[in-house]
Image 1 (cartoon, helix red, strand yellow):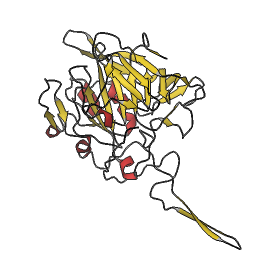
Image 2 (tube, helix red, strand yellow):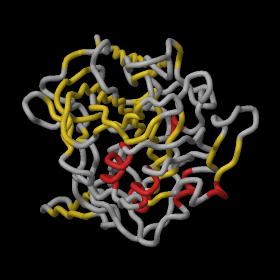
Image 3 (cartoon, helix red, strand yellow):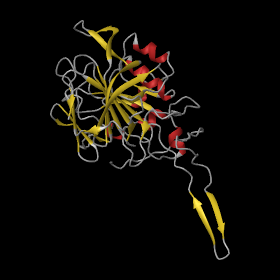
Image 4 (tube, rainbow, N blue to C red):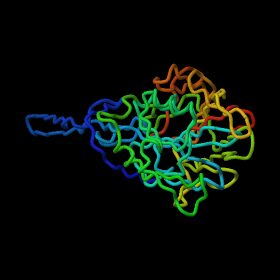
Length: 349
């Protein structure tokens, strides 16, 4: 895994990891006395882990709110994006045709700048509400989306709310040149008392533990989105440590030229529903149905586990279950989640 820099922000609420113990507890000292010797053993408190990555972080980092930023992904126009490799989690969400956009989540790390920032869709509400009132940044909205986001538990931080944090990057054509100064700056506008998720959004494997007893070896995954050219198809290749992402047949890199390489890839098949809006050609603008259940492929540790994703309502954490109904466990680290509307022509091997 690439090194990840943790930037610390102040907060008042502590998150207690599923493995137990708060980070502020003093180490427990145990003294053992015999007739010959007296030894003292100091046991360190359990590490506090991120709800998004499962990796150890400081208590004040884990408590701070998530910043979500919608990033464009039209290959050759929006690429290379800036900041995507720093995200804890990235959702790849299909929009018109086979064009996808990236919903990037920043909590344990930050990036600056980030972009290009584009408009959102209604599917983001269902994804973000399970993160305990995160800050959501986008650029451009229709008459339906904006009111829906602002009526939810999400903290809207679009260009309408924080215009001073946006700028146009030279050398890129509009609308692919809208950038935001950084995730830390956005977090600085959070409502008083804002905190991060109180529940891990994934099940994480312990060291040496398999994702599932049903996991099978896999070294590649191909994701074919429906429709026109856009940003698809997408491929991931296992290199023994990470899943390396390619897009339209070439390495998908961040602005510094580093290829996207993550510990986990989830392919979550979702239904497309009418968002109530139309594009310039009069075609339906779809939105992903993220509440309910559907087929899922989970790639971790050079394996694939097929199963079902389930989400009861907007604020419920999404479950990823194997064929026996048990949670599929991810490797602690970064995760990318693609959400195509059909499994046709997608495959793994």
